[in-house]
Image (tube, rainbow, N blue to C red):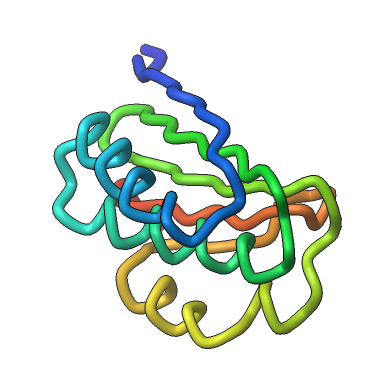
Length: 112
């Protein structure tokens, strides 16, 4: 039996003031208490690379939640595995770099 799920996407301006909007947006989509913080960490990592627009996505499937933040250009190493990386690894079951290396994703729930 396939798992049902939803996907939400939104582009945010690459400005620090948008981080609070990202947290509110995440909180309004999924009920997981860590989702807003994780969305914020992903957004800030991509923002630090100089992205002028950051595409955020939240996808659910069964008990899994995946949050993704992507910019227009490949992320420098400091932004893809910088200080926020330890927070993401501590709160999430899985984390990674998007296949085109322009963004980061984190997964909550489900099985490892």
